[in-house]
Image (cartoon, rainbow, N blue to C red; front, side):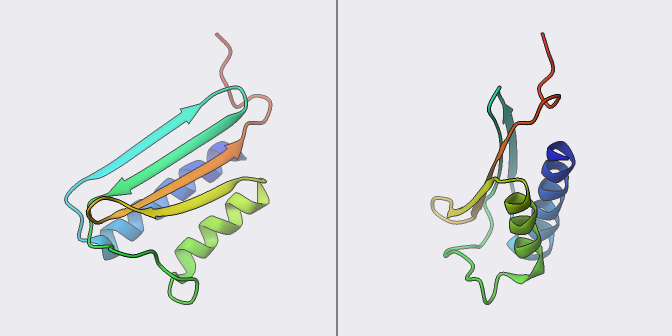
Length: 100
């Protein structure tokens, strides 16, 4: 469930970037350890301030709902000098981390 949610969140981030950000570059990082999976999606788009709940749209709300359902955390930040950074942290369930 966590892996599918991380995929869908990354997909929604890329959709939002394509529709709204006017970005030239996008970065996607996924780090998984024994306790936590961290997905970071950042762009160099036009965002200069964080979206507020009233204007965030359904995409960000849907991502936040997925994260909350899995007892995770989602943070938004502005990149320097502009662009958006989305960071999602989910607790790792058994079977998500491949054994060596």
